[in-house]
Amino acid sequence: VNPALQQVQFTRDQTTAAAGRLLCAAVICVVDYGRGNLFSIGRALDVLGLKYQVTEDADTVAAASRVILPGVGAFGGAMEIIRERGIDSALCEVAARGDQIVGICLGEQMLATRSFEFGEHAGLNLIPGDVVRLKDPAHGQGTRIPNIGWREVTAHNRYDALERLGHRPYFYFIHSYHVRCAAPEHVVGTIEVNGDHVPAIIRKENIWGFQFHPEKSGQAGLALLGDTLRI
Image 1 (cartoon, rainbow, N blue to C red):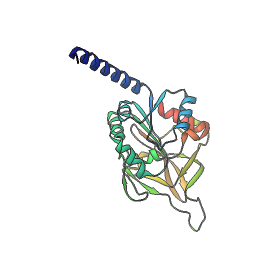
Image 2: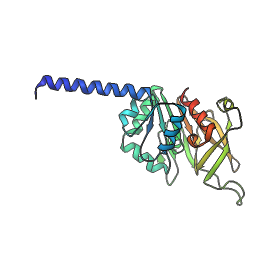
Image 3: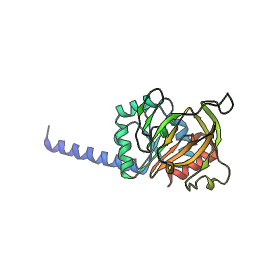
Image 4: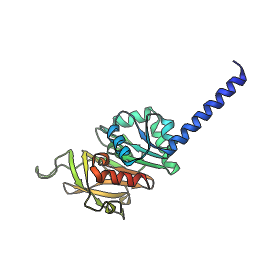
């Protein structure tokens, strides 16, 4: 093969890769690892007028300036998949660079240090804390687990995004486990479940987590998701 032609091809490949990285940085990257509600998230971003791409490629994730990590199902299996694909390292690159990650439902829990769902499993450790089971109702009186339905979220630590919604904000939850943050200042929104104040929104600098599904929470959810992604 002509060395000059090889050089041209190499340069062309470099240019294509660089263009891809610029595109990644300009749009929101939605991580596809087979465990996320991608259709609903895509519809929500379309309504908000935000450009996005869905990808399972670790390099694409690593190049992004805004990442959504969705998720449904069990913690251990989901973490195993993203490690096999190198997405865990890519997410850590994004976080270390100061760019934004938004975890939703299971994606929020994966931001924590470890989970005790069906054993003990290591998480991404981007927001220190443990994922633990919700408290069961005492004597059958209270919220049945899993916690399914619309719940009012109360703001903490000077988190004013809920106030900007202009009404009492309710969001849609479906979960049996939640993040118990190591640092109270990382909890910016809670719900009450069987006497416990359960973190519903967590944040550490550029890393955000929603235990509920903003993409399934009507106008309030869309407004909060848009507010967060435009920070």
